[in-house]
Amino acid sequence: MLTQEQRDQYRRDGYIVLPDFKAPDEIARLRARAEAIVDAFDPAESRAVFTTRDQENVSDAWFLGSDNTVRCFFEEEAFDSHGQLKQAKALSINKIGHAMHDLDPVFEAFTRDAKLAAVARDLGLERPQVWQSMYIFKQPGIGGEVRWHQDATFFDSTPISVTTFWFALEDATVDNGCLWVEPGGHRGPLRERFLRDGQRITMEKLDTTPWPDEGVAAPVECKAGSLVCFHGLLPHYSAPNRSAVSRHAFTLHATDARSAYSPRNWIQRDASFAARGFD
Ligand code: FE2
Image (cartoon, rainbow, N blue to C red; front, side):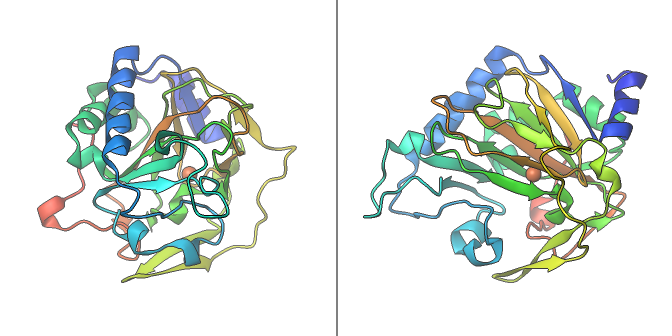
């Protein structure tokens, strides 16, 4: 599936972009399904927002209970000072997470894709296990920033094997909050670990290496249908979306079953709901 050049590029930069990976009809089906999930979501169930600031404190029961279910999270800026939504519900949701790839047939069909299985294999995931899916809306005007981080913080294993599959469902640009990465930064250390102990989350500091500064960060602008694959140690972030257009994306996080998945990661599965690969 991947050329030698693409594999070399992944090894060197920590990421690759594969344009036209998903067809417009596959994207349309996923978007329609996400819209239906949001439509069915009753905001009275939870007003939980998703933010990457102060993650220890905002990791509430709604978030922790989304590990192996399908739940919606609001944009941090969705509400006014009276706690009322400032815009329609459909334009207020930050993301849906985190187990649609196993629980929803449309998301499952998007995830279980022979082409994707081949890419994962080429990137070194011999026995992939997909732990998490997220549908990210990055809403117009209020789409929240995602601060610098490494995905291995959330999916630690020995050795580190987590790989991210990031699908652009709309064109991602600097204006609407595309991904930014530190090319080659996957050769640096893991800075922190997101640990779960029952209903409690702590962020453990492992290394004081600073996050890259602006001059080093590279924007990953790409067209709808592109797949961005990146290494679990690659530092990345995305800016707030202040533009008038959304930037929908879908992400999957997979480790290799040959590595030892940390029992302290926030998502755990038992034999009755085992993590599966892309087949
Ligand atoms: Fe990430």
